[in-house]
Length: 378
Image 1 (cartoon, one colour):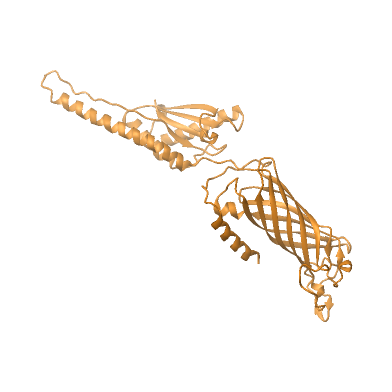
Image 2 (image 1 turned 30 degrees about the vertical axis):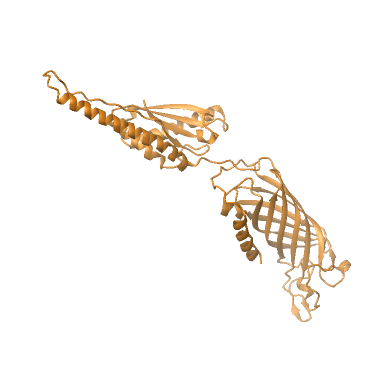
C-alpha cells in the first residue's frame, strides 16, 4: 500500500511542480539541518488475539482507535537522506473485545527511522519547494506499561511536509507499524478458538503536526565546474583568436623582410603572446582538483608557454567565509602546488613556474568560486 501510494504521489508531484534547475550542494556541519517534530496521531490497532471474535475491521471504531501524541528529533545528512528518533504512544488499544474501556492500554513505541526525500532525490534540491515526499522505514521497541511487556517493532511510512516558512513546515505522516512479540501480553503459541497466535500486533497511524527546523536548515550550492569551464572557454577562444592574428602578422612581416631588396636586410621573428588567466576549481576544504576537465585549458596554456619559453604563475586561493586565515593560507598554497605539479607533468620546467598563495579571498561571487587556482603567463 505504501509503495502504491508513493508511485501515485511522485507522479502527481512531477506533473504539478514547475521544473527547477538542479545543482550540487556542499555537506553542512554536524550541527546543521536538525529538526524536531510534534504531531497528533490517530492509531487503529489490529491484534492477532482477536482472531475468532469477528470484530468489525473499521479503523474508526472506538474500541479499535485512539489518539496519542508523537514527537521526533532528527537530522538531514544530505538533501535526500536523514535519520530521526521518533516516540509515539501513551494511549493505545489492546483488542480483546468491542469495548473501548476494556481495550484501553498505555504504551510507548520508540523507533529509529531512515528517511529518503524523494522530492530532492528525483527533482533536484530546492530550498523553496512547498511539498516534500519522504518515505521512511524504522526499527525499535514497543512497551506495554499495563502488562509490563516489551517487544521489538518495525515501521514503514510516508512523511509529507508542506513548507510554511524557512523554519516551519506542516506534517502529514502515514505509517504501518508491527511488533515481533505480542505487546498485549499474550505470548506466541497461545491458542484462540483452536488457532495458534503468531503474536504479531499491528497498528496504522495517521499523524498531523509541525516540523521546526533548528539552526541552518538549507544547503550551500557548490560551483558548477562545467559551467565555469564554459565561461573561461570563451576567454581561451578569444586568446586563440589573438594568437592567430599575431601569427598572421608575424608571417606578413617575415615575408616583407625576406623580399626586401636592401642587401643589409635581416630576417626578424616577431612573437606576441597574450594570455588570460585559466582557473582550476576545488571543493570545500580540498586541494585535489574538482574536475580534470579544467586541465584541458591549462594544457593549452602550458603548450603556449613552452613554445615561447615563457614563465607561468600559479596563484592559489581559498574562500574567506570558511576556515581561519592560517588554514586558508596553507590551503591556497596546496592548491597552487597541485596545479604546478600538473604543469610539470605537461612538460613545463619547474624553474619556469612561480607559485603564489593568496589565502582566503572574496573577490568572486558566489563565495564558493574563490576555491580555485589560476594559471597565467608572466
